[in-house]
Amino acid sequence: MTRNLDDAFRIRPLVLDGALGTELEGRGVNTSGKSWTARGLISHPDLIYRVHREYLWEGADILTANTFRTNVRALKDTGLDAEALTKKAVRIARKARREKNPLIRVAGSIAPVEDCFSPDLVPASDAALVEEHRIMARWLDEARVDIILIETMNTLREALCALQAAKEESRKYVWVSIVPKDSETMLDGTPLDYAVARLKEGGAHLVALNCAPVSTMMAALPIVSKAAKKAGIWFGCYPNSSEKLPDGSWNLRASNNKLMAACALDWMREGAVMVGSCCHSTPRTTSLIENKRNLYYVLKEEIFLDEDNDDDLPEYLLW
Picture 1 (spheres, helix red, strand yellow):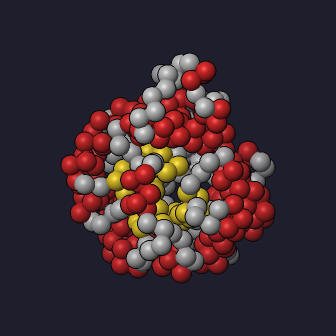
Picture 2 (cartoon, rainbow, N blue to C red):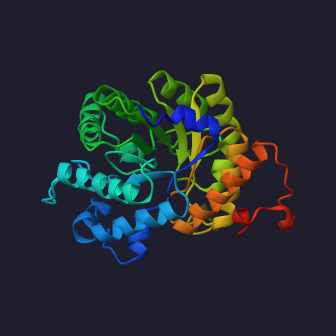
């Protein structure tokens, strides 16, 4: 493979783009129903392209195609062509990449077949799960993504089924991202360290946590970092901006961009090679994460700077 990610990771961490769905919602796209952002591929393809470009210009190294809800189950009874929309989403991302930098990687997203935060809804049949994810993996491979990104997985069982399907259908890099419930477990109660080890055994190239609050991500960092290093697998992190309130409700925009970027820096210091952001983040979030990545890279190269003294910082690292 010409774009060797292992070599890239040994140089510096890579920045994943941020939210697409909530960006489209904020710009007036109707994302109601199970099809969520898939409908935007028909009604607003130019807007999707512009959002991709914004993330690239703000420093993203990896662009995620809008395939999170283009699977067959999500589009059942909608009259929409799941295969056509999956490949269209990748074409839009590849076009944005081509016009910015041909070395940018394009990831194709594979989501849970049901609700991301409801482990109880995951189909009981492993064979059925493998087959559903196999279809998406095949389409993404045919569309020529660089990375198959299995993300927002709430159960280890579905994550492993999707990983098996992707490995059987494609020779591309396969990354798996899981949702932590707390500092030690996934949403289905699986211990995070056990999940990391099993995903490594299954052939994942990288394992990450995503779509959880910054506070949860930071609490989980010691376990995930240790488990990934023990298993010998790359790891990463891309939180959302939410935080749970004392009454049990959620503030979906509790974490500001600086907190998200600070979280990314802490993960990089522990060895993460991919950092980014998830729901309710913006291109500005990506910009600040990229600044932190650059700062980390400078410090790693032993050019020691005082972060609190702006006079010591290169102009491109200043906010």
